[in-house]
Length: 289
Image (cartoon, rainbow, N blue to C red; front, side, top):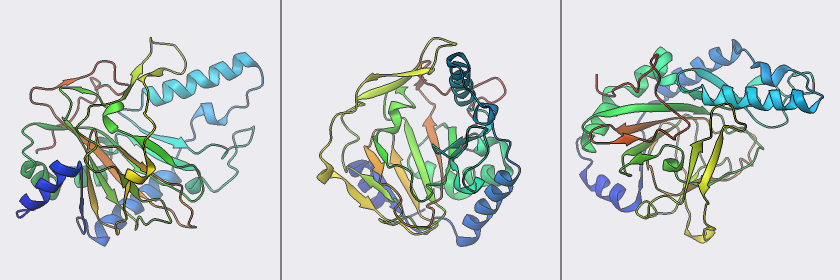
């Protein structure tokens, strides 16, 4: 990480940066093995397992789903692809192929993921970026299985909003090769300098769906996006306001990744309207140990 300065200029210019070979195959393998164990012991949430027939029951299911998401910031929870359960809540596909992501506190609650998140390598990278008081706000394990829909163009700061802007940074680690055919990331270089076009905010407690959007995502010229295929072990730095997306995974293999977000806490206000809020059980942990 010592000789990063030309790369960091590139990051300031583009809003993203690829660091190939950041993790070893063994380090990737350890995270994948750990996720296999977590999935094997998975408790499918009640709102996925219950059969609902009346409109009132459907509203209860929607409320259950909303609460499950909104209270996941300090837990390890499972978010599924559409259409993977039958009416009784039984899996229609193998469980490991049914999950979209696991979130949002692996970095704090699981020793393997905590070690990676707070590793010397990650701390050194954050220091080289000039971060004074970085805290970890959330983490996700993304499965990107074959088939389900693309991830639409977005800015992470729409969901993780701060004042001032420019204080949130995503670290996205490929645990499998991420190529064009299995849904690698695409970016619009330089799109991180114009603020955010929409924000996801919490709605009043008890309302469904629990969040709503202020503003809207503009229609963006597809030809502006640049693909960033990477090999297993690569780290992609993602500025909180850079516009990025991923296409559908058209291959027969997954595209697993571990991603977490840092916020520079010095002189920053975390929006009280963000869906994700620190809790007494889990204040945002400092990155530097």
